[in-house]
Amino acid sequence: NSVEQSKFLMSEAVKLIPNIKIRNAGKDFLDTRVPDYFWLIAATSTGLNHPTFSKSVCGLVRHTVVAANYAANLYNSKIVYSLFAPFSREDLSFVLAAILLHDTFKLGYKDNGRTVYSHGSIAADEFYDFATKETTIEKDDIEIICNAISSHMGRWGRNQPESHIDKFVSLCDYLSAQKEMERFYDTSKLNIIDNYESDCTKFINFSNNDE
Image (cartoon, rainbow, N blue to C red; front, top):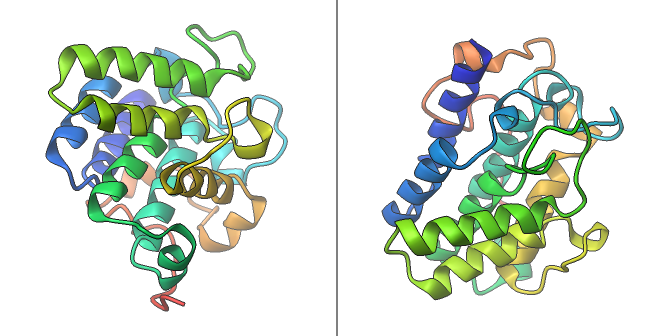
């Protein structure tokens, strides 16, 4: 069913996280703390913004995975290094964890039918509680991830991105929400999960040019 497909899609995206502790924490958080509605809802409750592929059932999951794809693909880009330096492999783990969890509480703790403005802070608080109690990730690293989650909305949010991690997460989220993304995505096959392959970048036509 759709929930199982969405969970599979996210579980594959989590594999992109280099750090095994953070990878396992992200997987366990998604398995145990995320509201049931996350797996089924569209990325937008108003129908505004966002490309077509994220406006239907499981759209929020698609939006999230596409944002993670941006991060994974742009990681080796010279542009990223020039804009967000320093940027290490460990930083990529922080970025991917934050991206994959940033919208997990999009409608709040329960499905109220609309986006909750503070959803980033809610997700950050939930992950902080989970990670400090259920994992051995260093507290400083947990805080880095949580800061990036809570500030992902950029200038539209209450918490503004400050570090290079925060800013990169916000950028990838912003890019994934743009209607122009449809140019890089086969919108004739909205149910991409059915033909999913282990390489998370399969269904985005990124250029190999790192410029």
